[in-house]
Image (cartoon, rainbow, N blue to C red):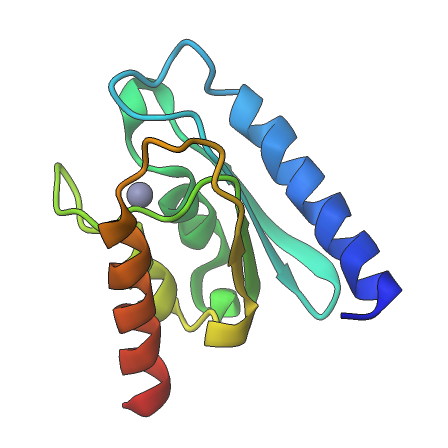
Amino acid sequence: MRATDQAADERFMGLALRLARRGWGQVWPSVAVGCVLVKDGAIIAQGWTQPSGRPHAEIHALTQAGAAARGATAYVTLEPCAHHGRAGPCCDALVDAGTPAPSLRWKTRTRALPARASLACARAVFRSISG
Ligand SMILES: [Zn+2]
């Protein structure tokens, strides 16, 4: 990774972390998450977990971006969820929106997240690039 890529990653992830703070104390039983969608070096959407926990940050951002999300990089402060709860998994939504596999980046902020989320994301990305 080039130094400039790393600097950009840190800047966008820093923004995602600041966005996540907007949900602190308001999103239970979900987790306060931030998501920034970047395309061609420009921010195209900023999402965060909404009050009461829905929609999740990724969906909030994808809704803003619409079709422009195709090919965008997703910076997410928590590994995108893979479970079917009150809504479908964000993993699938990111893949369906066309965020490319090599650019799906996230940093896990908690150790409580089950490993199956990673596996589900990997499977979803594999489906995306192979299908
Ligand atoms: Zn989610």
